[in-house]
Figure (cartoon, chains in turn red, blue):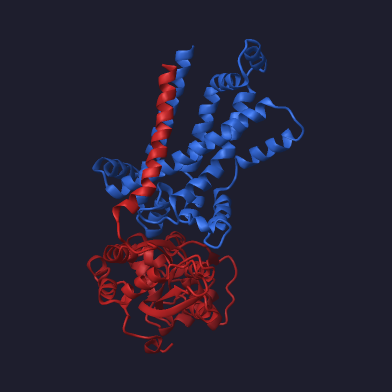
Length: 290
Length: 234
């Protein structure tokens, strides 16, 4: 009996070892005659994953080309930092100022406009700061003046960078117990704002995807300053030889192809009654006055 | 309360309906954490045995490090393993970052001190004369060690369970070195964090229950075998 039990335990561990072995081998066996380097590391913002867009885009791309996209969903700031170190192959981000810097530094190339939607400021229905319908700058000022709770991402993401910019443009240095930096992704930050009945700046896609959990209405929208533009960049293979340049280019081209753009344009229509993103494949920064 | 109960029902439904994506995640969690635990047993048990049976200068120092290691924060381990495995890190040529192997490495680092420390405690708490008795009865050193391991099996099994429980429920390191990639490095804990981020609380709750059920299942098997052996031996 003793030996049998020992044997059972040993075989359990052996089975795990074997299973683990199979697990890593299986993918190569399934797809023969595919691109040389299959894995493409996509560093992107949380909103593309949390809204569910990537769950539609990536399978379509993988099926078509045989590449395997490894999505690392972090804030735009961290995604760009990964690109700057050559640890990602392609970047899909929404932080224009930081993107321009990384292009200037030569770490990334081929910055192309993919899509846009907009940022909105949401907050408690009672609106203690009285910002409903105002411009972004007036809203920020109103929130600061009344010391109303404001939830900041505080993680150097694209949303966080825009928020910092808005404060700066209003000449406000946010500080105090009303200004709470949470350091989490957009989805989690929205939930915190909802629980604390605070104001928060969010991209519309994540907000719509989560609206059922969030008891905060839209208070400010439509200001030109609140435009949310997503660009794709390929990490420069001339600078980082280990980058999968072919895979990165294939994915960027796919995002801009008719198929990719139509997936983006129709995403969310069935579920939310309106698209979450507007496809901008044929536009450039100039169309948005940037 | 209702939502917790609904989450539990959803978890049972997910398991019963055989949702392929959930099964994939469950299987990967078991493989990765099982393999990491196995590696930690291979490293930790002999080390704990060696530490328990030998007296030497500096033993307290080593012991203090092992005990410290039992509480290593997973995120710190994750960060160090990331720095090593990144493409342009010292082990970058292996191409292991964002693979299941990377998670196994990080989890083995987390579990090894736990298993070593608890193995030391289990073997150290045996009657010290036992070893001399075995040796005087003509057992070789290897046989003596094996007999001691068998004597301490209850404590060692607890060490294995603590190690497995520690890594299967760990999220910081798995997220950092695995990246939560769908179909590749998505384990139960990282999937739960992501579903919370997406606002799918039902799904997150269901995955949590699946994690609890799976973790309990493994521990129950180990406990059962532990008690079975004890009754057998008694």
